[in-house]
Length: 195
Image (tube, rainbow, N blue to C red; front, side):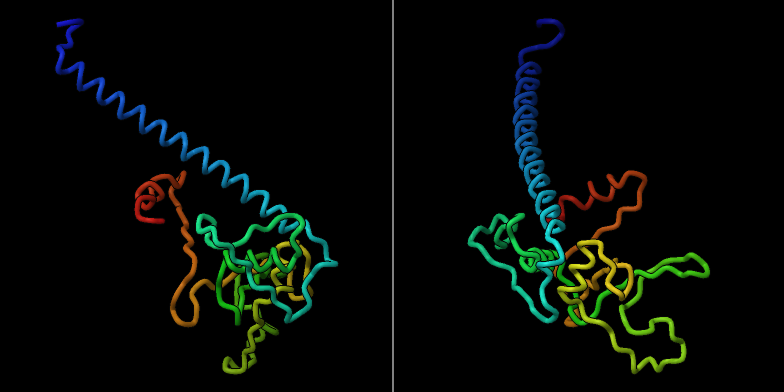
């Protein structure tokens, strides 16, 4: 026996150490990939916001997202600073897909200071209008451009939201709200189930 460890225990410790080192190397590689993806997404977000008003698409004009053969990026072609605002908006719409016939608009009460979200429509706080006559505003490229550029649109302050549950009761994205102190526990529990 050497330093209180016999040969069998030493071999088991060596096996565990090698397994831990392999796991560590795999996690380091995954971390490097995630950091690269984070950098790519930050650049994509910045390029979405760089286009000026001169390249805003005309109302009703739509550019479908370009598809590539690379399944690693979900089939979407890359968008960069040279891409038009319409192409950037098309990418945004493909990634954050929701209902096209209505969007959520942010409001702030001038009398009470409260804020919230409600469907975008003409005279949203008119209590005298018939509920069946409500006409909702559709999500358009102009609305998204105002949201992404931070420009006020005349229909509010530019902050908009999507309704991710589509009319056929399907959904194309997942949104999670982790309310624990640091958010790590629900994410750890859920992390193995989501991909």
